[in-house]
Amino acid sequence: MPFIEELIKYKSCSIVGLEKNTGKTECFNYVLQRLPLENKRVAVSSIGIDGETTDQVTKTAKPEIFLREGVYFGTSEKHYLMKRLSAELLEITNENTSLGNIIIGKALTPGKILLSGPSSTNGLRRWMDEMKKYDIDLTIIDGALSRMSLASPTVSESMILATGAAYSANINTLVQKTAFVVQMINLDLTSEDNREVFNDIKNGVWAIDEDDVIHDLKVASSLSININTDGLKKCKTLFVSGALTDNFINHIRQNKIFNETEIVVRDFTKIFLTPMTYNSFVNGKRKITVLQKSKLIAVCVNPTSPNGIVLDSEKLCKTLSEAIKLPVYDLRTKAVGF
Image: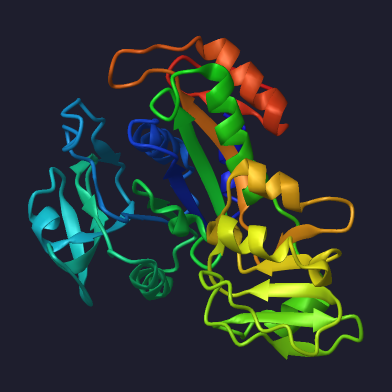
């Protein structure tokens, strides 16, 4: 698939599923088997446990993770001992999980492995920094359910999204829900000036008025809607350091100070809005932008759900591709939508 050529342009990639059983691990394996290992050093890990033969929730069969010779990996002590391949143990790190410290290894033969890497995005970043001493060209992270933060640009430069019938059994609904996620991933970067002003702010909600004066609105996060707008006649830009929620948007929409405001969030993983709320806020004079963004390389679909529903793969790929203006792939049937 053409997206492999695009993928190797980046230093890191997260593969994220919008729901369990949307084909994330199959996509992970597909990518691993097609990377040019003869001239690329590749490292892999996972948030959560990946590579189990049976889903612990649905009790359905899952694809196992297969590593090629030469691939570097990070997994827990427990799962390192369970590997079904020969490997060189390179390092026992200080990164601890409930399954033991994270082991850095290198596959000496092809084989299967359970990946259970760092349990937090901060831990994942530390592991990725640790891998730099092995001259890794590309790090691939296998995501976990409801861990969209894994796809944050602070973790990986690029991402692949997996969606499918397990996310919604109706093609139109599935397309609408997936398209909205893609829309959030592809939000515009804010201006370079805004990035310089907000980049180092870790907490709170901040406003820039029409005279380019910055105001601390004295609120810990957007989860609180008691915003202090004293002295603020008009808000040109509003920076929300944490989560951006429906309640927050619905509250500020009622205040004319924010009639022409650009809301800036750190990245798309901080946005927790319904499509209705987002669309009601964004208009000609209001928009939502980000400080950082990842490159969405591909969207892959699994037309089959654990309860036996099978969607028309070609129709799904075509309809979703038309909605998001990106190629969509079913890696199993080789159906492609452009």
